[in-house]
Image (cartoon, rainbow over all chains, first blue to last red; front, top):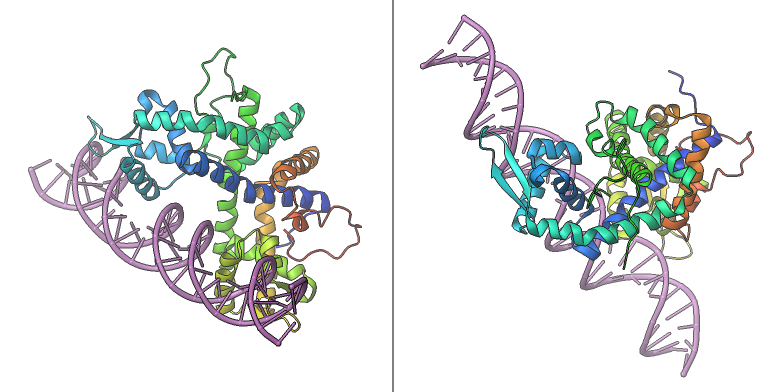
Length: 175
Length: 175
DNA sequence: TGATGACAGTTGTAGCAACAACCAAGCATG
DNA sequence: CATGCTTGGTTGTTGCTACAACTGTCATCA
């Protein structure tokens, strides 16, 4: 099978994207650990819970939204539970499912962490780009995710803000 | 301190970028592990070596190019050495430095893995974007990396192809 | 030349993630 | 109502990464 190689322009773009995917997560993680004592994954998990009805999701649904396997999520929830940030609650009807609920402490932690997190996102991404580039980035992301996440496993996360009215109450942790 | 929140367009862009940084590395890693028995990090490391003069770099310089700490690199090199893909060689002059050299087996492994890797990069990124978007992505990457990697630690990696002539011999593993 | 500090790597330990095996509850079919 | 399949979660093992402490080498300067 003959694989068309990447030309210079494509290589330029790809190498930069690769560098971003390499460096950006670590930068966010470092800031959150330092300022809020929470990993980026834990923060994102709690952010997803904070936007769910009754701040509650089942393990399976939560795993989908944060792109984690069920075993991994189980371990992480156990740790967060030990710190009092989330709680497990058996589902009243279906006794197979376990509901995870963000506690008041967890909610406070997310609210406390959010501003610093937004500042970091601004410094590293949003404020370095022009308005046009912001929209270009969204479109590029759409194109890549269409192939990378075809059945929209994480789609709930990134289609949530597509068609909102401006007056919508701001998501306290949706960043 | 008042943190200006992200507006809807900014949030759209950011959430997509975050999803890409979450999903893309895993996709590349899975493909390389499956097809070549090598992690994405190991592949990238060997690719950097393959483009160095005499396929050799010092531990420190290699750590810079692959954005790894020295301890982490030391462990990885030990494993790769055990598989015969790289070799350690003491520096003749400065006996503090250890040179890492890609073996013939390592070189063959990289060459064997490259086509499938390029195919994956094309499918997930390059071929999903228009020509304009390719250039936009490169520019966006430049802007983000200027803030994220100001002293150009990984710069050697992503500025290498900026001003090349078309006739340049193609980098066998530069993706 | 002999002490001090910086540099280059290695090794040991602890924590987190992937994978696999497992258990338990629901649900369908005969 | 018994059997088998599917779904939802948890637990145990292995491998990898970050962090810290340590060794050995070089440069500098008194």
